Length: 145
Ligand code: HEC
Image (cartoon, rainbow, N blue to C red; front, top):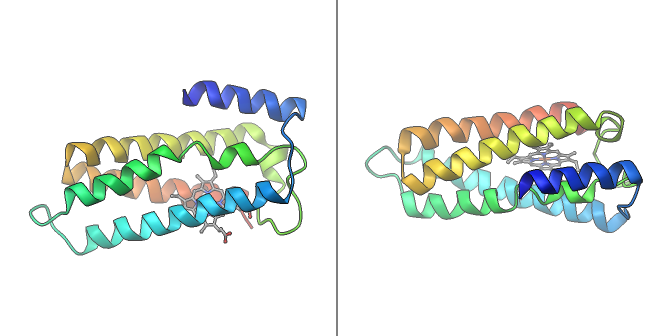
């Protein structure tokens, strides 16, 4: 599903089919804000717990939410959506392969976190939560002002 979506996105970007406007900028930023909230909640849970007291079910619900929306913001990066009011760097449109690679890194990390969380595997959750954070940072470094 994700692969098919990415293929479609690439085609759409190349063909300039995606209609982009201020609504796109708002939509993609809204997802990012949601993720910041989810990330903060998950980070706090990990900080305040250990393997015994880890609130596995609560954490798993948040990880699932992140994973379910992991493919969404990227639909809103069509040609021409590099407008004012956006912090996206021109590199998003100038270097689409690298942007896709950063998306994939994040998607893979979010999926791994979700799997670990659904299993209630505390050690794996900790490790993959770190990977998710790294993937957010890595993309922002190259693609966000
Ligand atoms: C593949 C690239 C990529 C990944 C992965 C990514 N971001 Fe972003 N993020 C962006 C871009 C680009 C912007 C700027 C969007 C704009 O202003 O148009 C942004 C903006 C943001 C903002 C500012 C939103 C606002 O309106 O003030 C926050 C907060 C944020 N990201 C959090 C996160 C978190 C947390 C993660 C990981 C869970 C994450 N991002 C993963 C590319 C990414």
